[in-house]
Image (tube, rainbow, N blue to C red):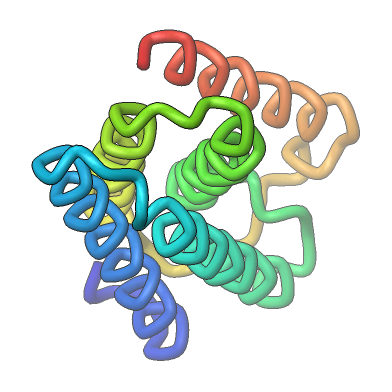
Length: 151
């Protein structure tokens, strides 16, 4: 993670802290048994999703391509999709356990993402073809659906 450029590192740490705050808030919400903090958790998820989008924009500018060619970028997209899925399904699923499970799952994904963090590199020529990009998006969305179904 220390190999990341300074600006990306700062945004990534802010995203990790936001997800940690959401997980701690959701856990404390389970302990008390009330749903008073649902809005706080949703706002933390939304801010973290914006931060992840900013990281992807930084990566896209750096490599001048769609930032899905590396493992780090793919995991950022995966956590971004999970966060957005929480925001969408959180309006329907009002159970306390859903916030707790999703926040800890996404925090775990962010920790794993930190382990594979590396600076942006130019993609291979084959990685810029549309079918490769479509395949990568389909794989990321499929993994997000599997993880959401297991929660």
